[in-house]
Image (cartoon, rainbow, N blue to C red; front, side, top):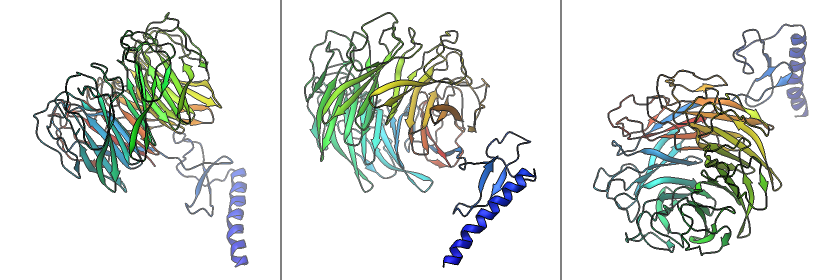
Length: 557
């Protein structure tokens, strides 16, 4: 046995040595080079290894990890797809499960359909729905069709969705009940006296069966607050934004109460809910430390473990630095420049950890329009940022140019200990005015996806690498840009387009999500009348069901 093992070790080593000698003699075995596929004269050497995966490409004298490329895996449509449903206005993914919102769906159903199928009824316009899809191998199928248990016309159930494992949260920002408590269980209030108060519904999966676990309302619920847009989840914690909430509080309330003051119109708030067993309770009511009228704090939220980030895209300070700890700026010198706030939990107590501003903060940039977090990395979108830069800046600076109105940008922040710094400034390589890059984004680990829903190219394939289309033949078709980090440097890895990209589909405009090597992108204004899932790289070219909407799945392999 020892002799066999020694031989199995010796042979690959001898082959490696032989290959290196051949390389030094300029006699190389060549193959399609994964290190620089565009180079015609770069030779790649084949090292024969004892790896279970077989030969490993070798460039120069450095072993390369086999490159993973992005490709289209599925085209998802609602099983009751109809015009104006807006399927894809919100998407979320956890492992092999996707949830998609459709705020314009109109059925009067008030139950969950576990399995295939969905109601064709249209009696409750804009009541909304959520759809759950499950992947087995590489095949996606519908697992559930979810309606609110108190579904009413105009509720917009599905305007926001979030998932972690076997738990889904769905927002209905125009739900109308005046309830100010949480209902743990399968029911919800039938009251309609508080127009636009909003609600969040929690669903739990057992096996492949989904059931309502809770109906969440804030402790200071009021008309027009629009609680439920957005939502985020991590483990047993749900965070809900209410960017139209009106209190003048500038502190955090840890516990189940919230201010009933209404003197700061649309200052905004976020609420934290926590589960113990199957019981949900309000853990905190969070206001920004510089809360003011019309800041829209809570327009975006994200959570990872014990850290929350929340955007306030109309915050007005002209600060261009990060405040770690302490109080956020009270300056109002840059109207709607925007800000993001980081909150940290210890036990059940939340504190504000940081106040993030763009290093090139300028009026009307709307920094904080969307936020995402993965452990110690945050990315913040500023869809109205106006620089004409088409490259990435790794480091703590950003362009001061303002010649490309609404081109958009995304900013990456990194935490060491409890201190946040600005790590990168991301721009699209085809950036131009009015593309709104950064209106939606997602992050997991060292991968960031950024949407530009008004991007104009007519391309219908995925481009891996750093070159992308500068075509403008499909206005507002939309695109998603995927960035990867190595060390502390970010580069563009892929450019995603819908396989049926058409003008005004708005692919990536509102919704992107990532889990592992899978990205899901919504296109709520896609127009096909298909009501089935296409597993594979194609999608329907039909345009007979305006704004029925679609979701697209991409995988890295």
